[in-house]
Image: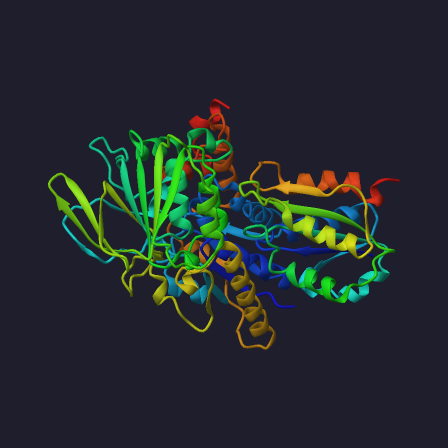
Length: 148
Length: 418
């Protein structure tokens, strides 16, 4: 079961996470969506692959629901050396801190030993490409289940 | 299995989020969102600035909800006119009031007759193609120019939206859906200065610093500030310090902190805004005064369309209709989530009776042509087909034209040229 963690302000990251789960299930895999504020970071060490999705809030800060996940990782410091992760970020290039959120979370996961699979996906809400399409393209080029 | 019939009044973000959260917990509930206009999304379509498409992107979530998740859109239905609120309340098990706040709160101050005072929300709506606009018009019915010298009372994000849209170079509107004709009309021969008054010290100013930063990066403006002596270090102060601004600016934007207006009076052909602050009184010559001090519903209590009188044991409220106009879309999403959970809990505990007729009982009582989501999609297509270069859509501002297109009564003159 691949866990897809999302942190959101306006619900767009949740929709992206829902899409990712649907894509994995359509490809015959199993995945579940977990809000970051409900995540138990002590269980992460045993995961093979996790997916993190977050937006950026205000002047480059983490969304309110991403922050507790980040803080828990920072204080509990689980050993993630056997974990790989894929990352997708949402942002708005109207603001110069576009996409900071996912980079902040990814950097911490790497610091805790996790290795990233593929490139960080990014959606810019100020552009007209639909989120669903960008998520789909990213997932198919990044997630192992689509690589066989 | 709980299958309540739920009516939501208002299709703005708070109403749509409430529907979205309810749908997750109650897959078999009947959920109908009523909307006065033939088009959905309220504040997301008309209140979020036209050049902030990123903030409008929540609409993609709502599109999906209407298209895939069985939430019904009933547009062109004004609760209080086309169906009474008491009928709605008896025809549905649960009613959620999500009607937002329509009007700019009025500034109380001493003033002469016929002063040019306009609401910031009204400007944002005008530039978003809202059908009915309450702004000064010239003799041929077009929007009148605001003049060269503006003052804005209030410095929250709506004030910043107006300042940015009235000053930003036109090429900066690429990728937006701004109403260009109205934008040019309001700008007239060009706005040269904007004095922005805020009651609080800069460290407590209402705007988000990301919004102030965006203005500071406009290529054609010069920003400055007064009233910051003795203020503690803060991001906003840094933005002013780092801002060098255009050497020959089109527009000077002067922020005045800790300064409040006291009177707006005629002096011959000019209008003078008198202000007060701890460091002394000051007056500004102003062509138009823009108020940006929040919103209210603008209807007398007891009016059939006033949400104030919409109460009852099965009535819930979300968003600005609940909190008097506080918070962003994200903050109000949380309140919709909480209220949806309260409703689910009340249903689970048997505290709400169910068994009402629902939409199929209500539709025959409704006095207007109900516009479905498919009808809105036809309007949407027509608007997109008729877009100008660099624009996402050309919003239709005539409600009767919207209705005709939605009902398939006209091949839109717009779609023909697509």
